[in-house]
Amino acid sequence: MRLPQSIIRYFSVRAIYFLTIGMAVLLFGMAPVGAVAASSQLTCTPASLQFGDIVVGQTETLQTPVTNNGQTSATISAISVSNAEFAMSSTSLPMVLLAGQSADVSVSFTPTSMGWTKGSIKFFSNASGATLQLEVTGTGVSSDPVTASPRIASFGPVALGSSSTVPVVLTNTRNWNITLSALHITGVGFSISGPTLPLTLGARQSVTLNVAFAPQSAGTTGGSLFVFGAGLTVPLTGSGTVPGQLTANPGSLTFANVQVGSSQTQSATLTNSGSSSLTVSQATLPGTGFTLGGLALPLTMAAGQSATFSVVFAPQSAGSSSGNMTFSSNASNSALNLPLSGTGVAPGALAASPTSLAFGSVQVGSNTSLSETLTNTGGSSVTITQANVTGAVFSISGLTLPVTLTTNQSVTFTATFTPTSAGAASGSLSVVSNASNSPLSIALSGTGTAAGTLAVSPTSLSFGSVTDGSSSALSGTLTASGASVTVSSASLNNSEFVLSGISLPATLTAGQSTPFTVTFTPQASGATSASLSFASNVSNSPTVQTMTGTGAAAVQHTADLSWATSTGAVSYNLYRGTASGGPYTMINTSPDSATAYTDNTVVSGQTYYYVATAVNSESEESGYSNQATAVIPTP
Image (tube, rainbow, N blue to C red; front, side, top):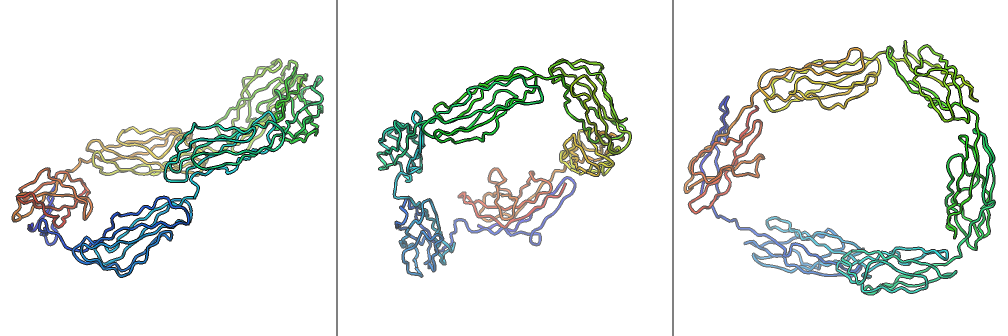
C-alpha cells in the first residue's frame, strides 16, 4: 500500500500560515503491509548465565547455545570477556553459523575472592546488531557455611560476683538457607542466651547469641560454644578475679564557717583494701561550693594502693551545705559515699548582671536600652543610696533611691544610650551602698553611627505585554548606604504582582545590596500598575518602586493537515510527537476515512511532528509515512 504526497498547514485567529515541507509537497512513503526483510540475527538462550555460589579457588563451567535466527549465514569473528574471573573455553574462530544453526559455547567461573561479581561476554559478528552480549554473574563463598564473629569469645578478667557478656554473631555465608538445630556450651561460669532453636538462617542472614561469663572462682577458665547444624565451635576464655574494696579516711569531712568569697581545703585518702585492682571512674559532688582536687579520673588502683585528694569548700552564699561525695568504681562497693558538710557566712555584697553594658552601634538620633540587675549576694541587707552615671550620652531609669535589698533580693532598671554624634562613646555607672564591695562600677560603651539610607534599583519596572494567565518576572535590588539598614517588611497594592527572592526582616550593612524578584501574572486584558513599598528604619521609609504591565488575551492556534487518497486504503490514522523521529501518539480517536484533519490541541510556541498510516479493508495498518513539521507561533 502506498500514500500519496502530503501537504500540511496551520492557521490561527489572527492569520493563516502555510507550511510546506520539501517544496510544499511531502511524500509519505509507505512500506507494503506485512513485508519482512531477511537478515541474520544471533541470540543466546538463556541471555545470561548465573553460576550461583562457588567456593573461592574452585571452577564451575556452564554451556549456552548461540543460535543464528536469521535467514542468512553469520560469522563470529572475535569474542571478548570483561571480567578475568570468567573465561571462555577454547573456541575456534572465525565460527560460521548457517541460517537456523546453533553452536554450544562453554563459560567457566573461578572466583578469586568472596562476594558477588558480574561480567559480560561479547560475540562480534557480521549479523544484524553486530555484537551479541551474554551477561554472566556468580558469587565467591568461603568453605565454611556459617562463620562466627568473634571467632574466639574472650572475656578477660571479670570480678567474682559480677558477669560480662560478649555478643557472638553467626552469619550464613551461603546463598541458601541453613538450619541451626541446637546449641551447647561447656566451661564453668559460661552461659548463653538468644533466639530459640532450631532456627533457619536465610542466605547471608545473621543472628546474635549473647555469651555470658560469671566466674565462680579466681583463675583462668576455658570453654566452648558448639553450634549444631553448622558444624561450628567457638572457643571461650575468661579469668575470675577477687574484687577490690574501696575505703575513705576520714569517713566524712566537716568544714567550719567559711566566709562567702573565701575557701577552706581538707584532705582525705582513698585506699583499695581488696585483693585485685579496681578503677575509680567518677566522683560526684553535692550541690554548689564543693570542688575536688588532686585526683585525676579515671584512676586505677592496685591491691593495697592509696591515693590522697582534697576537697575545697568555697560557699557562694550564706547558709549550710551538705551531701554525699560519691566515688563510682568497679569495686565490690561500687558506690562509696563520703559525707560533706559546711556553712557559708558572708557580709552584704552587690553583684551586677551583666557586669558591663555594651550597646553596640546605634544611629545618631536613635537610642537603645538595656536592662541591668543588682542582687544582694551577701548575708545581710544592703541599702543603695546613689547611682552616678558618667558620659552625657548614657542615662538610667526605673531605679528609685534609696532602696534596700535583703539577702538574694534583686532590683532591675534600664540604661539607655542616645548618641549625639558618630563615633565610640564610653562611660560608667557607679553604685554606692553599704555593701562590702561599694562602690560597684558597671562599664558602659556604645558607638554612634551616621543615619543610613535605602535605595531601590530600578525605581520602576515595565513588564510590557504578558498573555493572560502566564507570568513574567523582573529583578530589582535594594542597597543600603551610610549605615546598616533593617528592612522590616514589604507590601504590594496589586495582587497581579508578587514579590519573591527576599526574606524579611533583613539587615543590610552599609554598601550591601540584596536582590529580589517581582512576577507579573495578569488575570485580565488591559494595562495595570502597582507600587512596591519597603518599610525600614531609615528616615526616607518607605522606599517605593513602581511597576506597569499589560495583560493580553491568549491566542488559540490550530494545525490543519491534509493528504491525497491512498490506493486500497479505507481509513487513515494520524500520529503526533514533540520530538523529531518520535515517539508518536495517535490523535484521531477512531479510523478516519477522510484525507484531512484539524488538530485543535496545539500550544503556542511548541513544535509538532506528524506522521500518518493507511488501513486497508482487512484492518492492516501500514508503517509511518514521512514526517511533517508544524511550528506554532507565539503567542
